[in-house]
Length: 76
Image 1 (tube, rainbow, N blue to C red):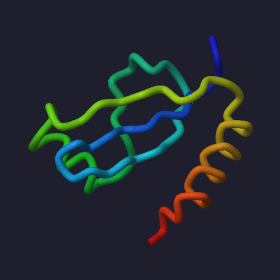
Image 2: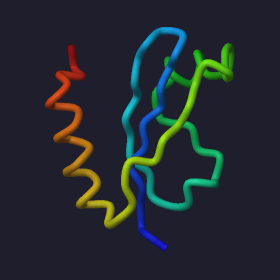
Image 3: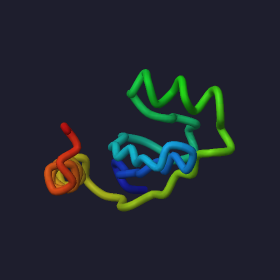
Image 4: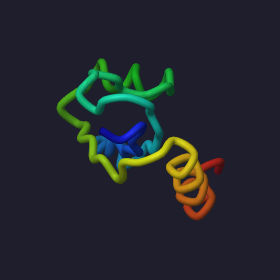
């Protein structure tokens, strides 16, 4: 089993993406660390879909996550 996974939640209602990384098993029911995203998910779970982007070592996936977030200018 891989150490970690990189995931992307799609919010079809607001047309937004949330990318994150997690150590452990994708089946552990973890959603994300974003308080706002979790609140929206609780209100409208049918508007969300999660895709696993990659599995691997945490450090490698952290690098990939950073690259994705910088390339899409996630801060803004």
